[in-house]
Length: 282
Image (cartoon, rainbow, N blue to C red):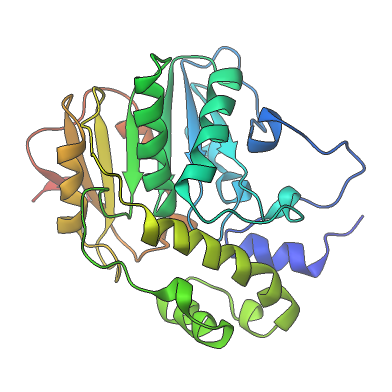
């Protein structure tokens, strides 16, 4: 069966949707978390959490990129890809509990968590809850392109925009193919989920930000118009076990073109000497 045009366009936008199949739709923990390339002998599992508007397909190439030592698990949130029929959720209180349960039920230790933008905030919340319940806790948390949870600076009100203005906001951010803006049906699929995800980001302000007893590695994009490397440095307050900050080229959606240096970040103790900038130190 040929891939429908909407699937192809969403794939190029990092909102990848697998072609329709007759397989039984997953339920329970399997609906929230899946592994496309099982590697039982891997030394580490990596739970990947999506950015606003994206789905599990954004991480489709990562098993190949990371090699046999890492088994990639991807979160599938409601309102996208194979869960397109499920209404998107707009609060962290709704998203976090089922993801925590899915990790405990499905992901063998040792594992780490990676999150980009909205996914970074979800990752911190999941790690906090997993530590609080006595584990198994992640070995480390890698966060990308997101302000730390204790940062009370205004994040913007994009989630309140009408469809026309939210579409313009997407265009200004960059990284979205022209086909998306030219297709009203495609926009009608994307915008409600994007708006719900942006609501999660704007409303997430934990009453207490507890430093995690595990390393936190932060990745910032040099030309990100939303989150600066200085913003990302604030994640150092979220750990008592070591922190590193790596600056990579690109904008907020750099992830679509060049993944972060995860092989290095997952390999061992985080750097403490400063900020890595394309192999140098700032």
